[in-house]
Length: 117
Image (spheres, rainbow, N blue to C red):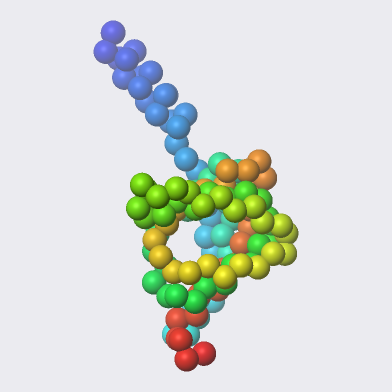
């Protein structure tokens, strides 16, 4: 009985810390470009992922506050506050993105695969 209660408490406590994943929808993907829409509810994150193409533009349909954690977690997070309609150039690399604000953030991200475009 004691171990059953302990196991139940452990499951409940770890589920309280579960992080919501951002939703990703591929809008266009061909040999030259990939365009995705990502929706980050408050508190959600992308998970660690890699952008292999150097040329990437992010348009913020709905802005907010994001923490960008680099692959090397010894380096500090980059905190960005963006407004609705803002556009940023973001270099390629490996990172995690987390919505640390109180509102949903929606982005449309375009990665140019062919550097000759």
